[in-house]
Structure formats: structure tokens, C-alpha cells
Image (cartoon, rainbow, N blue to C red):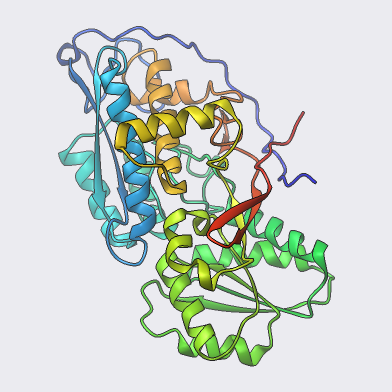
Length: 403
């Protein structure tokens, strides 16, 4: 069975894939973010380094994802720099803590752009926090490469400086719901999601899958960092929902499941891709048995040669086996580095042109990545896994829609 979403229709722009350096950075001039000046040099570029940056939740309820993603990026850049860097320069990643808060993320992004003078945003983790910074990035025309923020606000031409590499939550939860429906049709389902765009997107995906199916859906929005989940657990139990879908931070997911267990409520569950991470399974796996989980990156035990190389390289670089969030950070850094390698000059405009040249770029970790003019979606697929014991069992690997 294939799990896929419709590909974004777009004409891929042709772009030169030149790997030449841009000379003395101090002698160049800045180019606009909408044009590629072969002699232009962007901020954050010197003769010796290229500064890139991101904000992530390194504290608070979303810290597990942010810390893992940060580790993955730093490991990739350390390896790349040891091999000579990009265009004769080392990459310096600057990653700031946004605590999963939109206003903090905007403040931190402003610091990265105006004080640290980063050339581009390299990845990131968390949707509400990143969305808080998007208007600022668009005003400043700063390209953001593969942030993990699967919102329907991103991926098209509405925010052209944001290059996504994950499907949005609408597609993810439509696929999850369809998978559940293939096993049988429950009479009642529930969704608990981060209030705002995240939860609304997940609900929209479930609504699409449940249309005309006669299934009752209860939606309960949640504020990240909730300290007492008993009221939500009680509401779910009273609804008699047979299946509960979850799109919360890792810590909040565990907190809700603990509350559900305390009151004797044990429905079947399904969750977003964050629950595939080892850190979640180690802490909350006993409460999450048979939970269905969306997969946006390849299994760490995949036979894919690129995945095996990632596992070996990360382990050698850090001295420990990688997690799924480590995998996410690694591929974010990989895509950023590839764009910098392809750029005709190290300016924001030329980086954007380089990004628009990606046509089914293979990382092994993600489905093939494609960007073009008007198309910022990047990928078109997710898979399905299930928590069994202390492991995540892959039911369906991520797959791309074939032409």
C-alpha cells in the first residue's frame, strides 16, 4: 500500500549548479534575495566562514525535539567542516532557544539576522514557534531551508523564502486517519492538538478522511506545557472515543497518556511523527503500546545505503547512535550545505536560485526533495509506524509519488 499526497504542480526553474567560490567576501556587495548576482556576497560570509542559524525549543515541553535536532545539525556541520567545508569556508551554525514560543522565536530570529548576521536559516524545529518568525523572515527576505514546521501556511508561494521538506499536518493526519479506517470504522474519534494552526491543520486532515463516514470527531485544543491533563483525559473518556489522535509535544503527549491511564481510559492512539523518536519511546513507550505514528524520515534500521552511512557517520562523530530527531537535524544541515555548494555566489538571491534547482535530490533520509518557482513543498510523502515494545516497527516506509 502506498501512502502519499498529491504533488504540488509547479514548473521547476532551471538554475546553474556552479560550485565556484565567490572570492574575497569583504570586497563583494550584497545582492537582493530575489536576484542572483554572481559577484554578490550576503551577510554572514567571510573568507573563512559562513554563518547560518536557527531557533528551536531547547527548553520547555518541546525541548526533546529541539535538542535532538540541534545535535543532528551540529554533527553534520562538524563532519563537513573537517572535510573542508563549503566553497573553501567552514559553516558556523548558531542555534538559539525559543522555548517553543512564537514571540520568543521572533525575537531570537531577529537576533540571528541582525546581530549574528546569518546568511540563511538552517532548519529549525516546531511549528507555532517558527510560524511566529515567518513574517519577519519574509520581510527581510531571508531564506529558511527545511524547517520542521509542517503548516499549511508554508510550502507554496505565500511565503516564498521558506523551503519546506515535510508534508503539512493536513496531509499527515488525513493519511493517519485513512490508515485507521482501513482497519475498521470506529464510531467515535478524538483529537487533542496544540491550539492554533497545528491542531487546526490536524483536524482539517481528519475531517477530510472522515467525510461521509459517519464518524463523530471530538477536537480538544491544548496549550503547550499544560501541567494537569486530568480534565482533558476525563473529557476524552466521557466522549467514549475509541481512537485518540495526538499532536502535542513529546512531554505533553506523555503527560496526557499518564492522566488517561490514571483514570482507566485506554483507547487506541495515533500521533504525529515526533512520537517516532527514541527519546519518547524510552520515556513513554509503556503507555504508548500499538500507537500508530506518522513517519517523515527513513527508519534508522533501513537498508538504504545513505541511511546506513548517516548512522555510521553520526555515531563516529558523536560517539552515540542517532535518534529520529538527530536524523532530522542532520538532513536539514545536509540540504542547507547542498544549497550553499550549488550557489553561484554566497548571496541570499543565489542561494534561492540554487534551492530552486533541486529536482528529486536524494538524501535517503527524506523522500526525494524538489523545489522550484512557486513550489516550496519539497516532498510529497509520509509513512506509518507503530510502537511495539521498546521499538518503532515500520509498517509503511515513506514513499514519493512516482511520475
